Amino acid sequence: MVIIRVDSSVLTGSGHVMRCLTLAEEFRQAGADVRFITRSHEGNLNGLIQSKGFKLYELPSSPYRAPLKDTSRGEYATWLGTTQQADAAETVEILKDLQPDWLIVDHYAIDETWEKLLRPFVNKIMVIDDLADRKYDCDLLLDQNYVHGDRQRYAELVSPACTLLAGPQCALLRKEFAEARKNLKNRDGSVRRVFVFFGGVDPDNMTGKALEALSASEFSHVHVDIVIGAANPHRETISQGVKQRSLTTLHVQVENIAELMAQADLALCAGGTTTWERFCLGLPSLVVTIADNQVPFTRDLHEDGLLRWVGTSLDVDVQTLHKGISKALQDTDRNRQETELGMRLVDGNGVQKVVEVITKANQNAHYATADNI
Image (cartoon, rainbow, N blue to C red; front, side):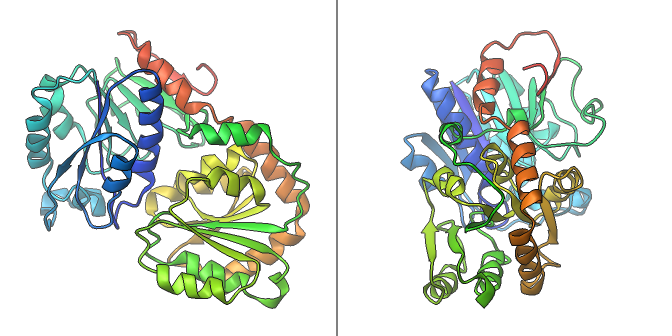
């Protein structure tokens, strides 16, 4: 049995749940009984998890303000909705009679404090993370992000016995991306269709800004696909904007995002987990980081020529996006470069690699990277 502890909300967004669903689907296909434990935060995707056929244990939501001792973790300390000790106690009540083979944790507000409390009730613990900003008590840690230089940034944060999976080759992508890659059209760098997606929630309404920028007369010939999540608080305003622009389609909580990316020639997106989906399909992109944790790897990817980082959601306005789009429509060489480098970095088979490593997990510590898995 595999238990996944993950949350989604207006604060945390949808990316954590979506990548965990991808991993859960792969485990289920391998014959595992996979279940979720989530808290009922505002803007959660608990209904989506259940619609996929997974058993879900829902923890109650309540207003929570992190104590002063947690301020070193900034806003992440509040994302759990309670203290780590209280959350662990509620989780133990669920797990004490289940004794799962693996407990998978994907949560920026959880660290070794919580994990040590769960140790007696599970066989092994896996952590999905990309911050490397706290200590962990786990048997396996997955960080699918792109990092310049020293890959050993978790050396002082995990036990020497912990298996580390690192790099975008481990990215948890759904199988439809690998399938879409097989039949991908030739990308010559020209831009006729634009894909817009700033996460399932998009609290800063970057989607609306992108739509306004794309509504300029010089882009009137470009087809636009706009994707938002069901929990997007700006849905009605965006819908009205889509109606006013020709050659524009709004997609809400889609199941065919790989198809939409494959059809597009340029993306306007956030710097989250969809980065690896775009790379798999060779889709050039203008990226706005909408969370602090997206900045380091997005900056590194920008410097290495794999995408164009426009700035943070606090700094980017309609004019900035307009300028970036205009330049991207002209710079076909850069577009082709991003296609080539992205597809070389991500092949779309990361989730199968991760499940294979977990299935064959043993007591021998090693550091797994894109080069040796």
